[in-house]
Length: 181
Image (cartoon, rainbow, N blue to C red; front, side, top):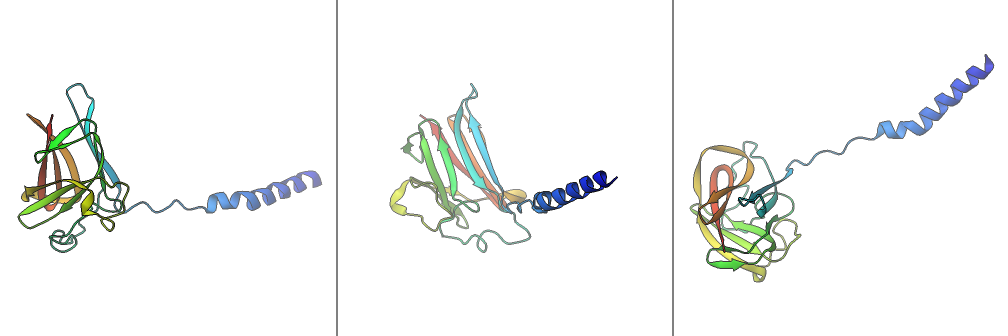
């Protein structure tokens, strides 16, 4: 009987000493603006273009003109600056862009946005944005969405000569054309 009692005490001591830290660990808080990606593929399912971005929520805030100021460079999302991967050479606003990885910045305005492809990658926000690293800039009209968009969203739409990247949030969206070469 004493042997069973000592074994039980040893087991209790072992579990309470060594297992408690495992159970005491808490799962880290998830990101308030989770990362997402959108990808466009050709007819053979090969990737053409991909965008990786973080999706902030509207949360009853006025987005453009307040949270995201007009006429200032924006990372086009939250957290890290938005990353754009071209798997093939494409044309943006008359400029040939070689296959590769770029940072996508925008300058939102009330009636139009300036879209920027920049060579500097792996940046946080727009704090280190360097205009001299731009490889293309185009202006696209800002349009009214038919319904509010709660979370910043990006998707590709196939066109007859390429694809367009659709970016929408709150009551606004823009369409950025990428032409096949």
